[in-house]
Amino acid sequence: MSETRVDALIVGHTGQDGTLLREQLEATGRSWFGVSASGSGGVGVADRPGYDVADASAVAQAVAELKPRELYYLSAVHGGSSARGEVDLAGRYAREVTINSLGVVHHLEAVRRGSPDTRLVFASSSLVFAPTESPEDRITEEMPFAPAEPYGAEKLLAGLACRDYRREHGLFVSVAYLFNHESIHRRDGYFSSQVVSGIRRILSGETDRFEVGNLDAIVDWSHAGDVVHGLQLALRHDEAQDYIVASGVPRTIRQFLDVAFDHAGLDLDAHLEVNPALLRRTNSCRIGDATRLREATGWQARISFEDMVRQLLDERP
Image 1 (spheres, helix red, strand yellow):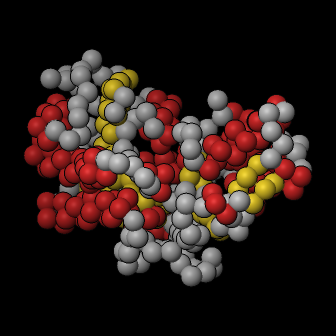
Image 2 (cartoon, rainbow, N blue to C red):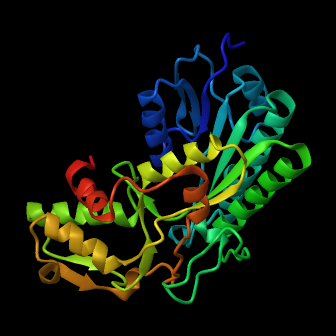
């Protein structure tokens, strides 16, 4: 058994958001314990084994022992369009539902039974909402849910469970609907990572072309560090609520590339090639309204869109 309770339990501590959360917690002297598919770790916590989020008993034991003041559920598996053609669809869906939905329920029940004063925030997704017709429209917490793909549906199921546990059992549980957010910790395969690697290949002389599917696609981008800070503010607010975490500013793929190529000293148009075959999904405009989070907690972006893009070029490993 732990001699002192841990400040934070991070489920998904090695991903982009988990990495930034660990850094921010350590900067303020807070202890944490984290679990992920790649293992476990912690700061200020006695050595203990990790656990599988699919194992309800193991989750219950860990939460009861650690009694975290804050619990961040950040783990997510997003097969998405990249999984097209995957043979083992049953395995893919079982994996996604386990991580994106069932694991959340296991932690909610573990908190209810073993640590009812733990505050939990679940990192949901903008994909639980339908896209808007215009970039002038904003998505709020009151918008109807309308997920159009499995990932959004799985996140929606977990978010509804969070609401139920908050209402029926009085737990402090918040749901954060995260819109697009980037940092140097974003894994390979995402658009921002492709931009960085593409520019570096051009600068090295490996290629002189950069392909993109749709320059006009509209995205609501924030820096992941600001988003993670918002999660902490949500947990430390007086009341558990559901929050949109977004910049609220529509930007196009072209705008992202303009900043990146200019920072690299390259002429975008001299290297650009539009290839519609690269499109994995239609342009779905989702721009968030974070008014509730700002008014409740004072949250605001600390890193501008332009500085975020420049940081990706300068510091991404």
